[in-house]
Amino acid sequence: MGFLNKIKKDFLAVKSRDPAFKNTIELFYAYPGVWALVNYRFANAIYKKGFKRFARFIMAINQFITNIDIHPGATIGENVFIDHGIGVVIGETSIIGNNVTIYQGVTLGGVSLNPGKRHPTIEDDVTIGAGAKILGNIIIGKGSKIGANSVVVKDVPPYSTVVGIPGKVIKRKDFTPLSHNKLPDIEKELFEYLMDRIKVLEEAVINQNKDIIEKDEEIEKKYREYLEAFKKY
Image (tube, rainbow, N blue to C red):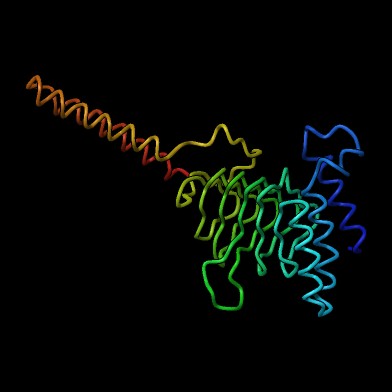
């Protein structure tokens, strides 16, 4: 795939994946993610030829203009779409496959000061929700979806959905588009379970309720069903 063809695909990705897109003129002023990728393509080509300082300078100017920080040494595939893009950070040894969608505030960062591969590998067709942090030399499997504000520090199998801090796989073999408003809240479920348990205990102390064991078993059953739901994926 030629250099200019990659840039062309960067522009076409907006048309195919952003329902807010109205006309081609918008690409020149309303999509900083597109221009960050275009600048990266030039800087990366220069970086590979050994002009690393100049490549870093180009991306420094890009960061000032777009508020998107991409290291010129990163590897980014074709048809990648950075939507909105503000606050996106992509580290030096990051590898991003084809057809990846990245929303604002995403960080592909490192957790080690040692040289070498220290940033994530994002395989093809992955969607990364707003504010998600993917840290370390880990692999996000093909077709996976990372929920907004998740913090992922372990490998993710292909076609998985991940949410939470730290990120947990809650669903596998899911081919539907990422819907941020439909992702389950693991912490909320656990909090509600604990509140129900406390309520039962309070009633037992205040009212000397003889049915405490029955209520406790009912809550415990719901919690077990909640845990078993994760084992189905």
